[in-house]
Image (cartoon, rainbow, N blue to C red):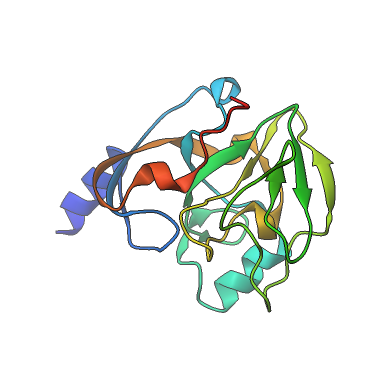
Length: 172
């Protein structure tokens, strides 16, 4: 069984059991980092933010090969790319270019990214999942360096609608 799982992982197959994305089988393939666009689903290592360590210590993130911190990768939609503007205001949904994203209000009791409007810099993305209000994403850990992106993710066999993870906004 272990050999089969290792082979499947090396072939890009991932099993998602979290509430941040539809549960089931996903496939991750390499992606040209400069070609990543808003709306794409990616496998990513979270940035080295204090909140990532805190969530790992509390058992909300599994162990994995992302460093620093030794946490697992996350499956998230790209909501903002270089040139976009992200607004974070405690108690409100995150906004990309002035458009509020549903289900992105930070939960009470979890330290959120500081309030402000942030221009997305070259070499970074912001990740927000609209699939679940409890998603652990950029509302907590902020921008993510593009080099943290491991690949583009697509559903193979899932329960739930992957299209609900992100807004296909008119800004694309």
